Length: 209
Image: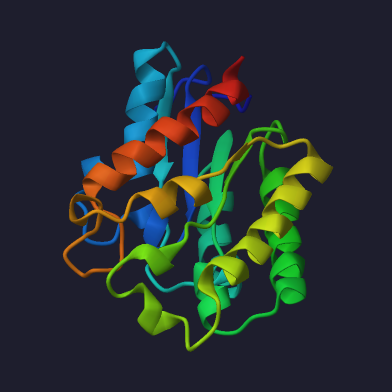
């Protein structure tokens, strides 16, 4: 654990959430985002943790995460991280091979920054095809199959590095009812993120036992 700095005692975990619209919670108030819900849930079970940064931006790809989010991550003195990235890579036609190469770059830098390289939580990419506006982003391609190929890379890297994974892909396919979709017809609602957090929490909790 890092020494105390900027008023934070060394006993507190410093959490940084990396990602895109799904991590910043497009269209959802801050308290409804899953990283914020997760932080509160962990506190309730006795984990002293602060969400110190969420530099995620709607529409960003792995390349933009590398260029813009990782510098913020590296200067935030993190002790734990989550990563959910890739949907925009797929929408923009990035191949699974190129996606995995960038995922490797991200994880290498994240793990080299953390005091404990095992404190990284990976979250799979959800299936946005079930939303009212989702099909417009598929460009005639099979969305579930394409996202599944990217998630295979996530699972493979997690296994190779012995990192926990929260697989929200199946859950996302079950959350097609209107109450689980944001007003834009594409992103999850606060109610959906609440369900996500239920699935993500056990994997996150494993980082602190």
